Length: 327
Image (cartoon, rainbow, N blue to C red; front, side, top):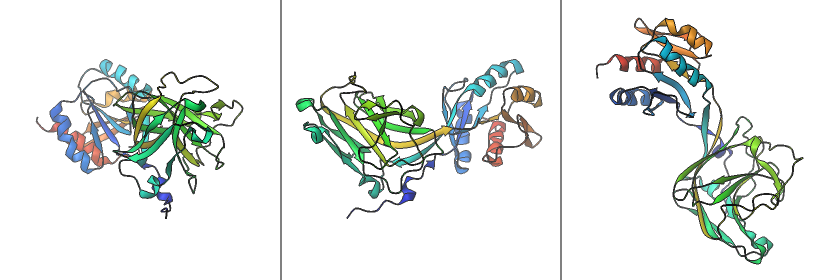
């Protein structure tokens, strides 16, 4: 008997908020791992002074270098223009709920007379593999969930994130917002590299409405507040008769390790342990809020005079204490 799905199994679980250390020594970065970890934060040290191209779940960014105001201005402008995303895990396929594992099954071109075949296996994640063939006018293999009951509600998020290890082929990620088995399929194609983890960020608004690989231009956008099914597909076709340029018949394999969701996050709090109140105009001009040392504590300056509600004062205090410790 199939185990019923607990709706709580498909509620996004936010990841630990991150503290990004830029311009920090290794010793200083190591000294923060334990105190910040005990407060529920993870420490990221990209090993560079510039702002990373993308930051995920960044609650604070620490600039540890001392220097004149003019050296800080370009860095603040870069940070203000950087997109920061909040991610949450929807399904961790390396440790799936038995009811979630039971949702998935194969749906191949045999329904149209083809001879392709796929299987769902649980090997370091959800393993979608098998043989795909163009014989008998076939050319696709897929795995799909049964309809989710209740439907998945992701209306507060901007898209999904796939953490997948592939084989160099181009696959499709498919969502449906209608319970009908042959309802509109909202698709996004993504490429993989053989034996490498690929992180695929897919905005809901960029998913293409299709019916049997034909686009439906006048369709309404995908409604992420009521998602009824999910599907992974390998097909020789892209859309409207165009061929998949990476398609190779024969054996294939894609392992989905994690499925997440994302949305744009507020700008991180800027921690400036080596600066004074003279940087307040620069922070205000870039729309950023920062903290600087003040006496035995700290002061909040810039775009706001208060810490963001989700930031614990203890994490700022731990950072300043680490700066003042001899290394």
